[in-house]
Length: 390
Image 1 (cartoon, rainbow, N blue to C red):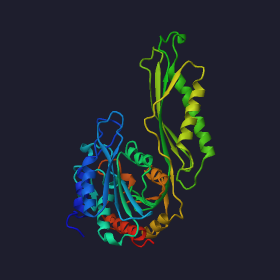
Image 2: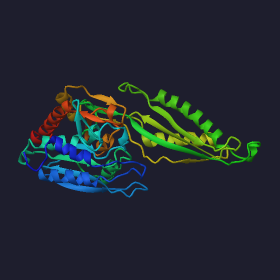
Image 3: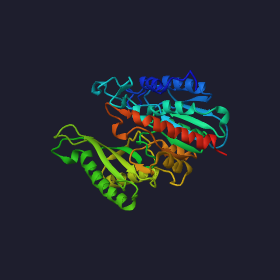
Image 4: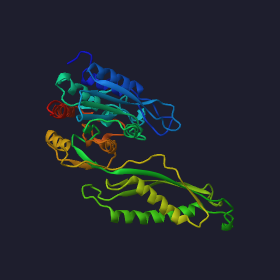
């Protein structure tokens, strides 16, 4: 143990107190520097070598973002304990307590990011202290990323840089202490049709973008059925890819031909589906429908998408997670940084003490009763992959 590291609740409270919102709206976007510097100081006190790596800034944002990569021990394999440092925006008026003050009541710890997912880092700090640095046969990495909630820019930067980390990874997203080895991917796109306005008394005076979007929507709904007939995975509660037409905006007056119309949509992809190929197919379908109409099309997706994740159920970390938790691996619908870590050569499991049902909403919390079991799981993984490793 070290006197330099605060206890679990104090370190947790310190991290919750840092406002680290990431958002595609620059008005809400914040830096995570203060949090990662605090975490870096604690990890250095625990004899980790720590690097703070700049993350490319989002368009329109002037906020500095950093990834933290900390390492204790040497070797070619080892374990990565990973979490994101950012939260979604919040409406403080909707909370029963200050979202930036860790508040305990009714067996729960409330605060912005408690479940999703600042709880991982204080648990890692406590778990690590049970092991002497000289006993490490393989390295332990602690990874703290930026902008998971908005663009995945932190994870993308690590992947693109080709940084070599461990062979096994745990991401502490909220799973209720159940190991997750598979989740769907996400593709978000905005389709903009541009026509020509004119007086509604003579349709020939313009090109109606709203009518064009009607044809696009009809084709997309038919295409959705084709995708669902072609792809199926019974491991998921909803075993097919889904498509949601989430928002449509167009026109300005009933007696004026609509000159522009935009449709925002999201597709949830099964792990076997390529984000790049599905996005290209989407563009082809839209372009084919409006061909010859005189309308122009623009695709304004500001999110590159996330691939689905799938880790083999016989992977060493999956079998260990099942043994330590007493739970069989499951699937979830939400996305994580898992696909990026797997692409970097790791076998990844998603496992944390929070619940996804309370994430991204007022009065987010993590149950106190799950903290010690999660700390024990982390200690068991460190012991297995870093201490007992051959």
